[in-house]
Length: 464
Image 1: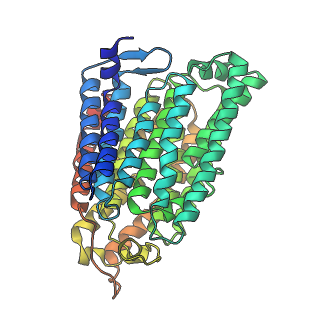
Image 2: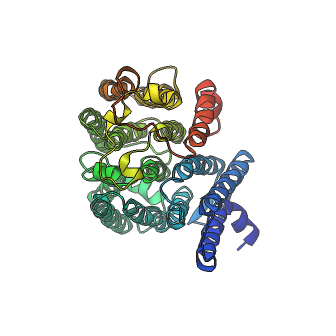
Image 3: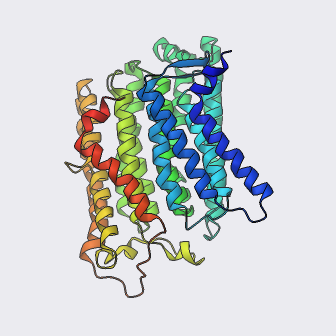
């Protein structure tokens, strides 16, 4: 084993692990632990810089052959995931003063990075569980909400069902191919026999559960609503990114057989339609974002219908834009009563009434995020959706693309309703204008790269 190669290839993971160890030591040895946010930020930024440096340098290695490998595109995808975590940490300043949140988040992030380098189902399973298990506790940390324990339990049940389905699929795959290497999935995808097809379907369904695809979305909106704002932001962006990038690594550049097209088209289409329709009826901002994320998961899974060559590129670009816009919206969200003083009131959309009069910068940032998520040109969300649907049409699935485009228009209403509340409604009499500490910093961290992506999408796409 080449230890220099191990250290270099896993440098982002090692830096996160160093942050976890330092946080534990501070918690154990300091009588009044402080600085958890700074330590976590330093670890994440250092890991992001390492991943970006290696990726732009064209580094490629397989320190654990058949289990773990890195390539430039995967390293840059890791840099994107780590970069999206920075505003999540900044938003956590108001909610979590001790190190529990930061320890759990870094642990979950470590698992997410493993997913992007997995070469076998053993490593993939390890990454999935490391990513998921800390999130169950993160949801529970929203102790100010009466429904946080229920939300954590529901998310645990969903995660457990996904894990059981995944392991059953892997067991059948091993029986069909005699291998646990990721290429065995592509082999089973092309085989067409009953055992291989059952294995592929179970594994895909497990990832549908993880990404909250209809009809497997079940309690995901309850978990989003019951968690605190930083945790909801993390679940809606980083967890979603980890799951979809793992699926992209699983499929690779393989073409989708005709028999699997319906599974990868009809359920994502149902997610687009139901996610957008259900979001229209929501009165809670977090719950609305939950249904919005269900619809966006449908768009992301649509990418697998396109040609294998541009699939990873389209998914990473979409996740980058989607993550930036979601985090931008959470950064602009005023602090709710439930976040500040233990009141169990939900973060109602009505609290956004008159936001432009109370906090103009927050209203403008929120409007930009909503318009981009709706896919309005020339914002980056339009480019991301265009890329997905263009690939689907070029692959010959024009009807599916048209239905998906029509479904995407359903989402414009509830995004515009948020803007209508912020700009065209009078402020409620008892609403405070407080925003989150470091919210402006989080918004800037998201807005700067979002502007760059909007101006130079071709340059960004060319890196993946």
